[in-house]
Image (cartoon, rainbow over all chains, first blue to last red; front, side, top):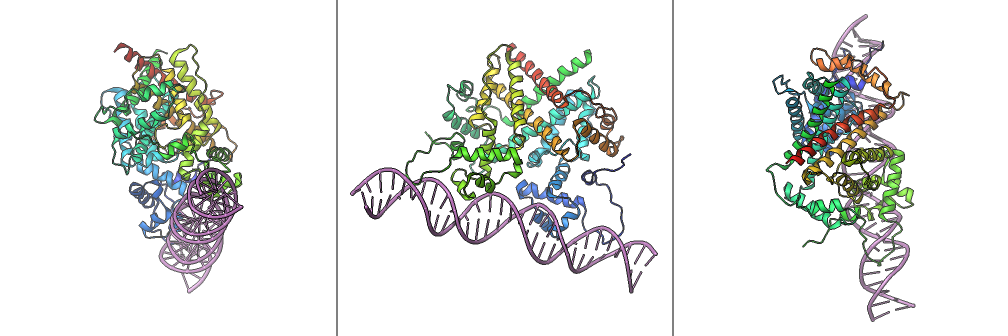
Length: 250
Length: 250
DNA sequence: GCACTAACCATACGACCTAAACTATATGGC
DNA sequence: GCCATATAGTTTAGGTCGTATGGTTAGTGC
């Protein structure tokens, strides 16, 4: 009967340590993590340094190790902190499809607020309280379907991975166009033209056709990133619909 | 009429520099990148160091800067190198579905050979010759469909992102169980039980139900990771099928 | 006031990436 | 054959960062 919880999990869930002995702590895990998140929001992931965090808090970097096992662990804590709790359960009508769509939109919005978040190294399955909160909301949206637990978890994994990947790509493209005052369509043009010169139409006929198709030349929608995101999301949701129908038949 | 190509792209595509002047080079980009890949295969991404690469090649770390602009750029080159060219075009029957499935399987196999590959930071849209090769194969599988280019690119992005995310998760789970001689089902048990103790059934009823469902207790398939992968893949392919039908109707 | 415990700090070390200046080795024109 | 030139590679050094170690400070409870 192991009642114990790994120390990393304990800090993620902020389990109180219980001890009135010794010198009282001037900080707590929360303040450390919040300072780190604020720093990442300002300077990016690469700008997060134990020294700078400590400076911000008026302590030395070594004292942070009283609250965090290592920088790697700190990154995990930052991830859960920045993700925050999932929005309230919709419970409204619209069924699973609207529920999943809202969920994905909300998660995307979180990534937009913290551009570094999708770039955090994955450290395993969702384990923090906020990650669990999002998990709960997603599963809730699927509650009235005939899917078994394995399928629900698969959908959750797929969907969160998709949002993460899409956000990551958006951020990277945005980073690529920093300095040169180009917006998204211009970057796509640049990309398409540079590669059109490199791609041999004989070796890669499909790609060559793509780059001469004019897809990267037209300035179509007013928010192309949103449109791209919606395309993939709808495609996934169509797949979910198929799975739900199949489960209902069984 | 800019005939020029950014220097990063030039190195990715190994554009020859043309110059018989000066001291002849003892190395070339290829050898540097291959040594780096071999090192990553052995020691992981964190074990890749300019010093170690140089050592392996019998030079000093600074000389590597003759071939690579920075370590960041080296990572990009490593990514394309390790990905390698896509497998030969199937051209067989089975249509787009078999084509995409084979493609995804092959990409997954590449990630299995280079566990660090899915962990590389994304640096933009596919740009290297090998990435383009995989792009070409994927587009080829969709050739006989009525999808427009935008949809095809969306599917490519979605699919490659999915494979990447799934591989990343597999690697991280495998890493989590290093040291303690546990296999996948045991790790899932450990995960399920640890979280079952932390998750409040009132706040997170769905998750609580999941963790008491026994999903993480049973040792079901003989290759659970493969089964999970297939579930997501089939779901995506079902979504693609829907999109193809819709495009054909239009 | 004394043992004990926990929080915090000063110091130091070892990686690592890379800028700058210098040396080595080839080519091509005279 | 020699020199200007251009490219390759080395030396040296600086700066940043994570963190191991050991000492110091500030509280609690007997």
